[in-house]
Length: 342
Ligand code: PMM
Image 1 (cartoon, protein in one colour):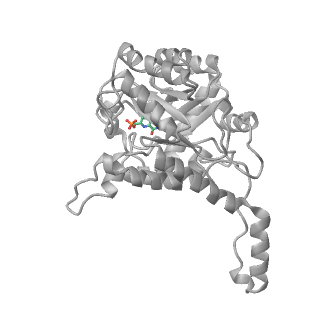
Image 2: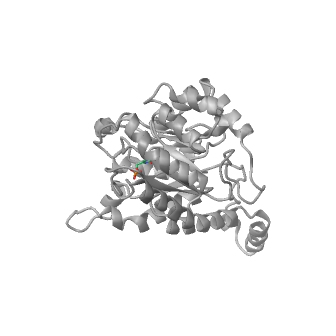
């Protein structure tokens, strides 16, 4: 089934200018020929890095407009915190938080996604103008989600998830994190496709920080090409990476006494991660601060283009090869397979 889902995804997906971008395009979403930047607006009192800052609708709307002005291609609006240990927010509360914000941002012409695990919230968000459903549970939290997304025929982010935030720390056990995340994502993709969701509208996400220890996050980031192909040899899915300000960055950059770097001071490291993920072929990076990340994805796109510019590289390589022994000839240029990571 997954081979079919992957092949269907590939054939249904539009391609950008041949030879220039070589990234998957998801129908109905921006396709600028580089990794997209998704700016986060958490309309919550308790999200881990920005809880409470954008809880009032006016503040959230201004923040969304600001992120777009700084270069975000998509604005992701969420009304329920998923910080480790967080409890659930009621559907009514979640809806009351995100509804007015999505309505205003969509009316302003922005591409808006809704970050929700609930079909009822997704449905209202789509009616308010959202174009993408970002479901951190990959459809596991609400059995009605796949039906809703299939009927709406909108792009859908399937994130790797093992359980609600209240107990996700207890679920961070892996023997081979990349292999297991690929297997579990494949099951979700197959279930979504089986429920009628067009595979070419599915974006996958390894779920950085969700039931993951720092070493799991790093392995998944380093394994993006494998994740994009769900561990197989099929065509890659578009991959969204949400590493921004997460605590594994603060741990990496901890002070000598072990005090983790505060969230607010981890944006530069987030930009570095964005550049690396985009250079590895990520389709989108989900971030809390847009400007530096918008620069980073442009740098990465140029880096990829230079690597894919066959004729110029081959010309240079031939000249160099003629003056060097065969054993030190440069590697051939990367395969132009039109895919994501890898
Ligand atoms: N992370 C958070 C929330 N939503 N959505 C996707 N697709 N991927 C993520 O990694 C992700 C997400 C948690 O981070 P936040 O509370 O800072 O928004």
